[in-house]
Image (cartoon, rainbow, N blue to C red; front, side, top):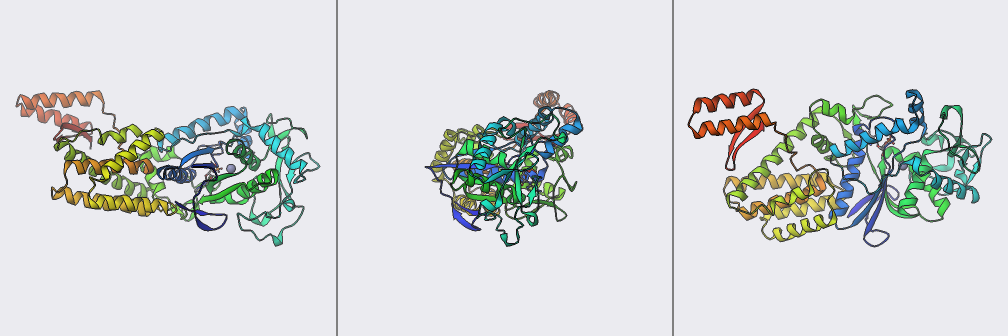
Length: 496
Ligand code: AMP
Ligand code: ZN
């Protein structure tokens, strides 16, 4: 699998540092508000990456941190007049709900910064001991950028114009203001009750050291892959490298991957610009998590993606086409009395669940055993789907393979040229694609009991050849928003 490394600006083969396990650190949300769908573009890119890595047979440990103490969370808690952890708890739990709605696989670890202060203090102490850090007059500790000659290697900065000795207290600043940055901020009244004791005085960690300390604790001093949005490259990830490599004396991360922004009218979707939608905003307009996931996933991660409601509507049509295709395959297989065992594979990985390696292996075995049954056009789609993923997550190519397959499959079914076993094999191939895409499984619609009762009444009326009653019930269901579909498997209800 080839990935684009921000550090080298090259496509490189992904080779784990140790054995077959890829260790990934992903910068998670700052829990001071509901995450917006720009943030979720980053998390969906990382989810696609994670799922693709697993498809190619690697094991994986992914860590996503929760930034629950920083300038923004403290300001939010102070404004709300509640303790910091009460303030952040709401947004942490909303975040996990949103991950489920978007069918994002859980990471292996979600460390919260406030639970790891001792690790941060330890790393800062080691930077002080090695003279990479110093204390300023107000008691804060700063990283000395001049002490790390390769500073700027990730963001590819030209360091010639740097002003030595300049210092920056805020976590976020522009490249033009490269400066010594805060590792530890001495307490001041703006921090309220938020403070921890450290050997050099009371205060709290800076944002950058949080990620370095948590990544090292869970993944070691050197690990494989670090991800985030492009806005994280500078200063956040640049500062992480400086701190971590100065503390350990070892290379910090081998590959860095960054996704481009979700934009609205050409500008980054962000809270500070006020041009953002939360997932809740999208759901309240009648779109689903599945449709949102499709939109955020369907553009290549290194290209900026323009958000629009039209894109959500287009996603709805694309998904409908995929659903209809799957229904047709199931119909063909069932007509040929093909056992459900192969078709059901998909359910064992149900939406929001976390497919275990065992399930995945059995999936691949099913795929392998079925690949003998696959028509040529489906086998070609399988090869192209994987080639796309292996080419730096070229999702457009993988989705094109999928839709080529739908087209060819529909034509084969129109011509009654697809055998039952073949239909089942194609369906199980789709299920294995969905271990990566996470959008193909139809959410099961909850049909209210009242509507199901009416459907039964209609069936009884038809048996009794009481057509007037059957029509009346059909109209009543229609008034409630349900259409009756007579299928070879019996009558079913579908949303109008
Ligand atoms: P934050 O909560 O601001 O620390 O951001 C969490 C993640 O979302 C980071 O990886 C950011 O780079 C990413 N992010 C923020 N805004 C956008 C956007 N408009 N498009 C894509 N990623 C974003
Ligand atoms: Zn981070």
